[in-house]
Image (tube, rainbow, N blue to C red; front, top):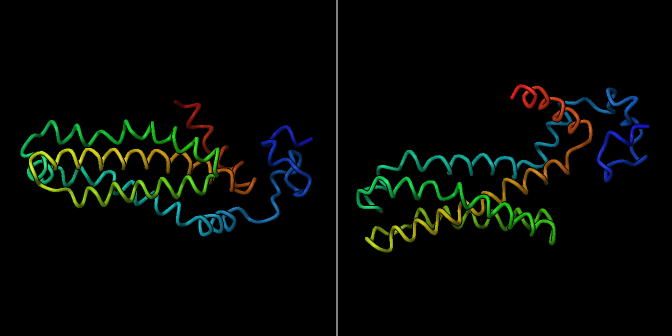
Amino acid sequence: MGSELCCPSRCDDAQPGLSASNSRHSPEPYWPMVWQFCVTHRSLIVSSGLDSLEWFSYSYVGPQIEKAVFHGNYTLTWAVWSLPWYTAIVGASCFGYIADQYGRKESVYLSGACLITGTVAQALTPTHRIAGPIWMVLARVALGFGYGGKYSVGCVYLSESAPRPMMAMSRQSRTPSVSAS
């Protein structure tokens, strides 16, 4: 009876107690289960937060980047800042394909390598008049490409590895915000 409420890959009789009729009585308490999930997947969760911190820190060092790399060109500084927002879409598509063909974990590792490459390349940007802006553009493109892949594939990986009661609670908590918008 409860199989119509769950994803087909998760519907099995190996976990009795998770059908539609008794889904409110999960075999273990909810918050310890969430804590265990977060501890198990801490590297992906923490790295997503650090990626976001790095992503938005550009705006704080924008004036210094404007002077050192773009030689006072305010418009070019912020145009380059926006590049990852566009390349993230391409990265999500490419890493989604990689995840489908080779696995979610490999795709997350590869997108993390793109993020690290982009971040280190930004830190090592030369101040040369020609090479500096080109270097920064390539670093921001690599950063956006990796961020798009890590965010999209990471969300899918976490949702696929979440226990069923935790998934049901997260879907229930999203319903009011979706209906309000």
